[in-house]
Amino acid sequence: MNDQFIQKILIDWNKIDKTSYLRDIPAIKSLKSLEFCNPVTFFVGENGSGKSTLLEAIAVAYGFNPEGGTKNYNFSTYDSHSELYDSLNIVKGYRRASWGYFLRAESFYNVATKEEEYEEISSKKYHKKSHGESFLAMLQNQLAPNGLYIFDEPEAALSPQRQLTLLAEIYKFAKQGAQFIIATHSPILLGLPDAEILSFDEGVIHQCDYEDTDGYQITEMFINNREHLLNRLL
Image 1 (cartoon, rainbow, N blue to C red):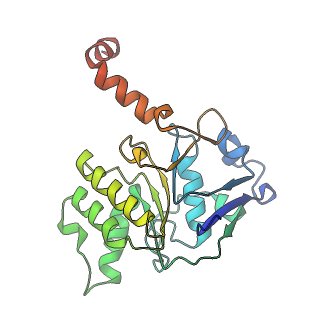
Image 2: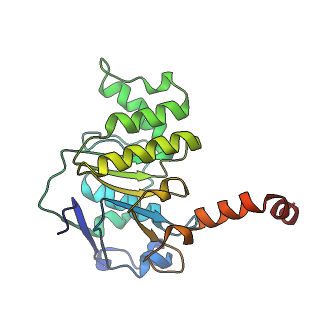
């Protein structure tokens, strides 16, 4: 039985303008529906393939603030999300998430600032820590059993060691009923056992094995053939 909080999304293309750039993104323009059957789903693909566009649309359609945070956050410094969320219909499961969080790496600073304003007394004061430390701390402080988490490139500020820490946290809470939908390039995070990986490359969203992701293949190639590769590049 599929017991995920978000079980499926449907796109009504009649609600999207005929001249919208969304119709020029191969993996997006061919998409009518997408199912989520796994506690952890990764979106992978080259820059511009549409993975963040779809991820952000899902988050906003679900009720999260477009720049990130919990569903209680309500602010805007710059509207950069697409119209795609207006056309999304989210099919929810029978369970209800007890908590949730939307992370956009590019707007982390704005969310950390608002967190201090919203929670002046109990604020975690993320700006007092290094960027990587505050990034990981915010994620860890928001994770809880039976939560829904939508992360866009959570590895952005994290060292390889901290990515391993985050991987372990994701694995732990996924086992405790949480659902994660994550766009990432990290070969470390993508190594999470039993996760579903959806590739946005080749013009259509499709399942992908870990070893077939660019993150894995390019990292492996560089590590095993560093001198040869650098000689060709440089």
